[in-house]
Length: 449
View 1 (cartoon, rainbow, N blue to C red):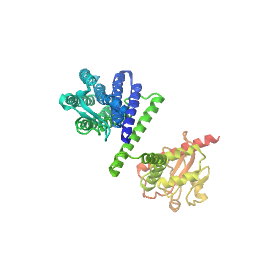
View 2 (view 1 turned 120 degrees about the vertical axis):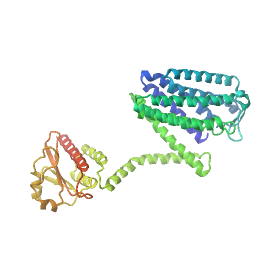
View 3 (view 1 turned 30 degrees about the vertical axis):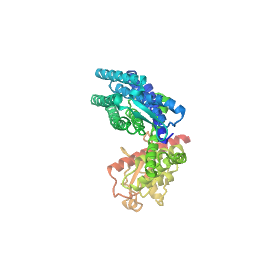
View 4 (view 1 turned 45 degrees about the horizontal axis):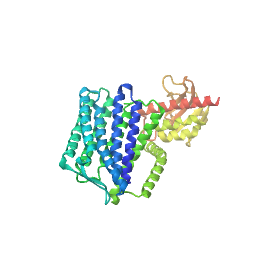
């Protein structure tokens, strides 16, 4: 079986999992809608798997026996899928129920006629000697009726989606349905070209339609989760949704890989060695993602010297409370990423600093005796001579306080390395870091007691 057909089947299976999660995660009032969604996924699976298996057939006796059943699955599965999509988007409206009933009856009539007499659609099944195909018989009018059916059904559910978007007050749900509309518009166009117009002339590309529709359904399920359109209140639903989304992203990657590989090397189906190598490389990349992310954060924090990378600093400091506090290490880390010439900690009369900063004991004593600030973390340095401040590059001194307001220590800031003066935004961010240090020191002290 060609690699692309495996992807088609994998997408179809994921749509079923997504639909099941939608059913079990929906509220009672939305249960009927979710069942329509499940019905659409079942139709997509029948359509997609039938196409993938049919295009993989050889010319053996069993292949000829199973081929007519697969062709029935192709055309009946598509009817079930699109009718169910219409039901999903329109069933809440009276006119939507009427449209759904009309297209469901018309679809049943088409299916019954085709099952009773398959020759109304095709005159011959061609297996072997290349890709399997079906000789469409246009003279009996059935295929034209089939095309008209879908060319009216697709605009119908797009119309109801637009109506739903315009009359939905929930902004998140509106965004989700808009995402679905765009996806269905693109997938409907591809299906119309590759699964309606081209099959009478070229049959080997009918896999494009189910793949596009399947990815659209998966994309819409992602939108359902993103915009909180269902409630995943149980652990197994969350696990299933994670499997669906991660696998869906993985399949999109493999699809892009297949298309690029085929275009570059003019090969229809990559060898299993190439596919295996691709899987190995994906595993390696995923294993290195945390390291890449850390490197990017460090680089961003070090290069952007005119602003503080507050999220990265908070993330790193949050891990400090889980181990013994090393003030010198924290001093070096903060001075590097907050872009000060140095940052020192004065804790219980002892001064900790990572850089080569020799502040005399007399000045340390003066700093320790500064009065606690009344409304902020910043202490007044008016009692310290300006010459001493300039000589040792002291720009600011902050009091580290506990949740109760007790002074736990002080942070001494050197000169900013890229600015002459700190802006208000900088001061707010530095204040947040000083407060976080107070929490870390307080919790560290408690853990020792």
